Length: 106
Image 1 (cartoon, rainbow, N blue to C red):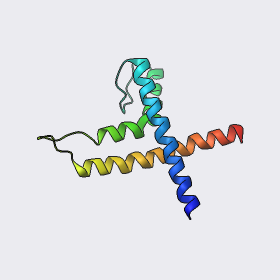
Image 2: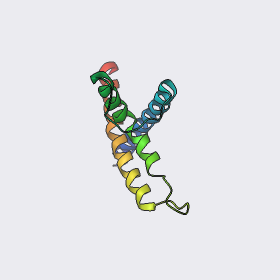
Image 3: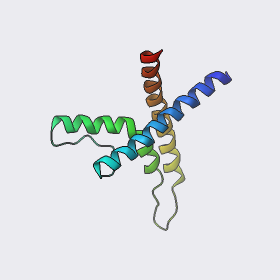
Image 4: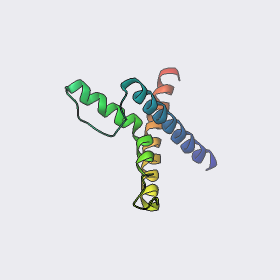
């Protein structure tokens, strides 16, 4: 049981690492903030935004959960919900990345 738990933690770590690196790379190259969106001037831009949203989504969700309310307090429920969604999403992203890695080099 411990091996399955460690595998799940590893997949989440890979997914979150790829999401964080992809987010910062996107922001550096495009000089705009990464966001969850699907708009675009052309169809290629739309698919590019969808790909960025899928890969970088867990990191963006973690950032969305840390917004402050009036008075400077953090909403615990918002932070917990965004963390649960982000880590679940990171698991799926990590599973796809590690699966593709093993399929190519396995």
